[in-house]
Image 1 (tube, one colour):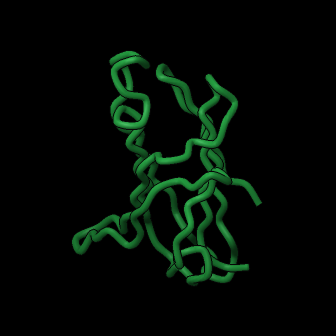
Image 2 (cartoon, one colour):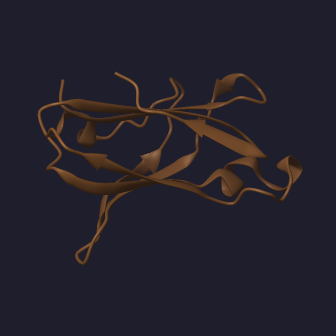
Image 3 (cartoon, rainbow, N blue to C red):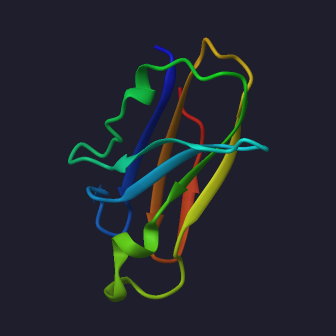
Length: 110
């Protein structure tokens, strides 16, 4: 499998972050949004980028945590953005995110 997959869980509730807005961008002089959508009921971003081979380069994924949590969740986090590098276009990059209103944990999975 090639491409990029994203999985997000609201760690405060232990549930998939259904409805969390996510954007994936290229980073550089010609930076552009290459994927955009919401996390589904299964906790993943259903987007064709999952099946698309990403070129080697620098990318950024942005999670709109503040909008997802809303006023009831506090006012600390608004957006969490992570920059990552693809060095092998033939490999798959999985980014699982766990978050609360006060912090995030994201790592590269297999």
